[in-house]
Length: 272
Image 1 (cartoon, rainbow, N blue to C red):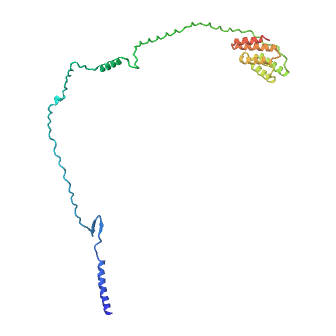
Image 2 (cartoon, rainbow, N blue to C red; image 1 turned 90 degrees about the vertical axis):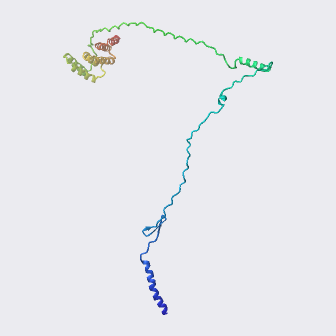
Image 3 (cartoon, rainbow, N blue to C red; image 1 turned 45 degrees about the horizontal axis):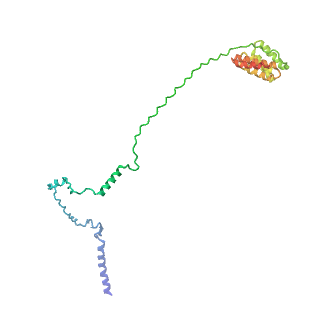
């Protein structure tokens, strides 16, 4: 037992000292990269690459030698054409046989005949172009001078207004009397206003329109013509008033230089 204890005691220091070497500075482990092992900070030396041996280039021989040529003998005689003379036939031998002569004669006859479908050309004379027809000369019609229309002769006929009328109602009669007094005094506008007031009271009284036409004949003949026409239309049972209404229309047209219309109005007045 003592021996074992002594052995253990002696072996412990040896183990401790042996393990202490691993805690000291040791060289680093090798690193393998690009097949270059590095130990510490110095790379491992490598062998330099061996040079690659290249094959030598082939040597091209110089071919600049001149070649002399010489013409062949007898070439000129070959290129020249040779004229062969026909050999004469023996006496008594014909060139063609009788059968060949017949065939040749038949061929010559065929060659003289015109070919089928061939038409001999006939020269046609050029047709004469028709001459253009002469254009007919335009007929000039004689101008007939029309005689100028005779101007209308101004014929102003004498006009005499109607003085007698059918009796009127008291109201309208008083207005007509007032209009007559204003007209005698030269106050035509006042007389016209009074008669227009009376026509509004009796709008179908032909006498009122006739008197209004007389008042407007000098200043406004066109209005006088319209009023006289209306008087002629309303005077159905009064032929005298109807006749003088058309005469008043004729006078108004004469003042407007419508002499043809005045004749027509005068023709209508002659019917009554």
